Length: 223
Image 1 (cartoon, one colour):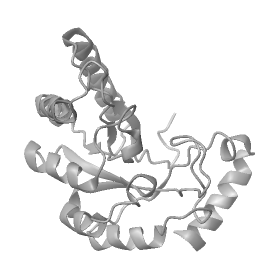
Image 2 (image 1 turned 180 degrees about the vertical axis):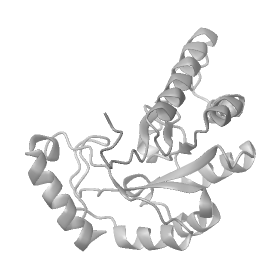
Image 3 (image 1 turned 135 degrees about the horizontal axis):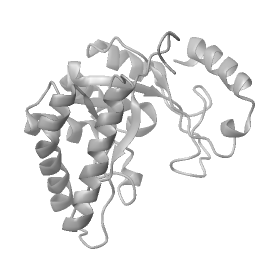
């Protein structure tokens, strides 16, 4: 379907959720992640978004949870390398730590890349919604440099009502998106800027043509 359309698949979103301490669940989770790697290769996507998974109630120790994720990523490195796939480690906002991801800062993403020592396989995805709060952001983006392989833009509404599904259109919220864009580009990023607005109570209810028109307008004025 994609061939000959001129469309580019910037990324496949998302896979991961490999924090479980249960051995059988781990096997299933790793198999699912491998399937996502295969899908990413099949559609020619530029990268696979990796979401680590949240804290498991059977093991509330954050340190051991993060170590499990890192160990499993290390074990998956040869598989991703053979498929020619880049895995984008995406730090999510700390308030998602219990449900979605124990990877919650650009610093941690950098530390994981250092530990994995596989720059041909692992990079970092920067989402304005997830990192705008971080007082170390400029320093860690500079440290990331060419590791940054995806850049997502969206906004944090002052009256947000859902941590995941109430994101704002660029310019409607509190994030200095142009400022973060300048940091990302200063670090060496020069590829696509992906608009990623999960908006159950607003933008998902609107006509897609209207949404696309406003995205194009805001890209010029708020990104």
